[in-house]
Amino acid sequence: MHYTKKLIGLAAVGILAVGCGSGDSSGTAAAPAADSKPGTAQETTAAPQAAPLPVAVDGPQKDVLDSSSDGQLKVLPKPENSAPFTERVEHKLQEQVLGRVKVPGRTSAECPDGVTQKAGAVSTCNVTYEGAVIPYEVKISDSYKEGGFMTFYNAKPLKGLLVAKVVYNELFEQYGSGSGRSDASKLACEEFPAATAVDFETDSGLTCQYWSKYGNEGDGGYETLRVKTGPYGPSFEQVR
Image (cartoon, rainbow, N blue to C red):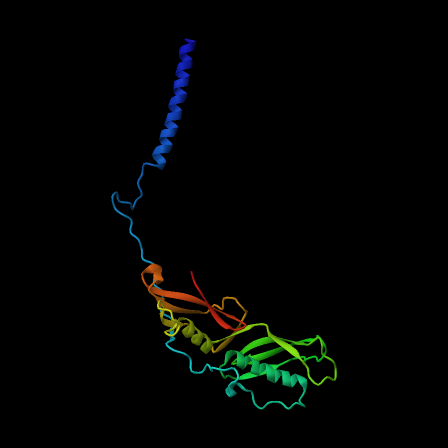
């Protein structure tokens, strides 16, 4: 009798274990998904097409001059050699900005605390081009000697300058009909501010685009370009 009871006890445990397993299995695997249909292939959705940007770029920009020494980029009147050193530096900084962008525009400059004319001295100036303010660091040469005939200095911009017409012109040069690229057409950009100051080599938040037969995952579509700027002008980085 004792042996028989032991068998019954083991059998009961076995049944409970199987019952628990059976309950879990039926609760997790048996029910099909509500919207699935046996034998029906899953549908795929085409990649969304990018919308064309508003400013079409169909040629070089006529306001971008060929030479940084063009007379239209001079700031007049030029201070006399006898004018205060700070005034002459402010004038030169304006012409430096105009020479970099090669687009005539309204400029002004101010060195709030003046330019300290001592060996190795560093001063801060601000140049404004069409409303965009570019800070400059002006450093006097370490070899400067008081009373010398010439004063050498280095002027370094601390921000980049994005000029709309320069960006459009550069886009056409790099991707337009004369660039040698056969995969790019329908060039366009956002409507940029006339000029804006941005950090060097960082995403400006502004974009351009071109249409490519390789775009939209090979189906043909627009490729988007981030716009950055460096010491030598704007550059483009493709958005992946």
